[in-house]
Picture 1: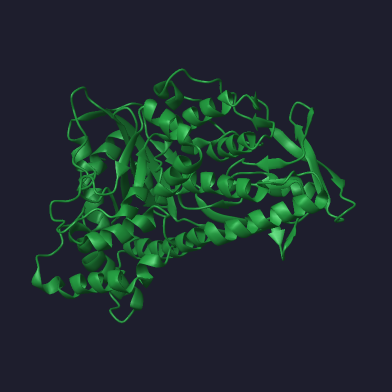
Picture 2: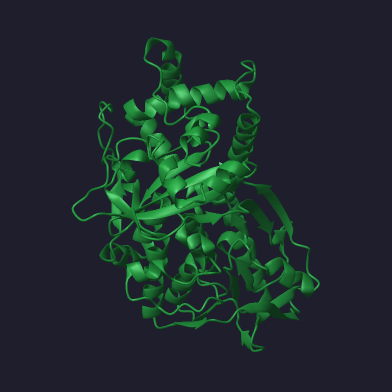
Length: 484
């Protein structure tokens, strides 16, 4: 196993419980912390995203409860909490009645570092997983498989000059994985990849409630998009929470100013969703602001036209498919991918070339069927968000062309969907199932009943008060509110 983050640990846990002996090779020298708060200070230079906001969606929670319920119990014991659909509904919601399927709609509130720390503890307790930390992988060993004629990966070479052999190598080295370069050095590839810039720079800050304080009521949106800035609140474990602000990549002024902690906090107080969290009830738990750039949507193909590029190697998580972190899907799809990999391996021993061939093809098909649609949906959303952000940065109105279908759809979302989420349990349930990866990306838009309800609200927009702005409407107004 190359990489000891969430995808690697999830894979190690599942493989070990299927009876395989697993070695996790992790470049970061990461001795186990003694507590969740110590884990927040973990030195994870190989995974800078660990101290950014993360969501642990219902798809992940449901798979854990069905397959590794002890992980959920350990997370709860470490201070995580469940966030169930139906709790903290807005007071404007009428006629809500729980349905049996609502039990699926349960998220976990947790910091990424806490999740990874607990997962590693559980993996270590398996007794079949060995960790080699503080040493990186710089290549692959291989041989020709006589049965299929393809190259077969037989292990990895480490930066200290040693070699680790394996029947199967799982690559969980994240979005910056060097796997394509390793394969090209063997004469394989180039790996075909599809890349789209998310168009944002991410800035996050973590806080803890003061003694005796409580979170604000979670009965309204905790995230949104003003076009010139995106924002979200993520409740964590042990009375912590984080706020993330995302500025367009091309907006050098805004992204630079948000990197200052005083400006960041002041900016959060200008937004309806984030202001209650910084009304004096909490204080930062670290200096500065964590900033992350170079955020890409990327999909790499390791099976082409039904044939694996090599045998004995499976990439998981961001090494094969990564999406905009603002959607909070990374940990969930990373674990989900590990689950799909374990299903492809179930009942098989990765010994012969034909077995390895079939495992790779089945796993790739599952990724393309289950997870890739979310990548494609995110690429489309990001393209539209970049268009709007570019118009606002120029000082133009992105909705000035009323004949453009995109203008109408933005109006439907802003003046139909958003108010419906505060009043209509059917719309809210469908939206939350979509957000939590429990439906297909297009399920909400294809649901006739849901969209009819949204359009009814949109058509009545002239007969109700205007929507309360979630923040300054204009970028220039927002900038003027920020300290120099």
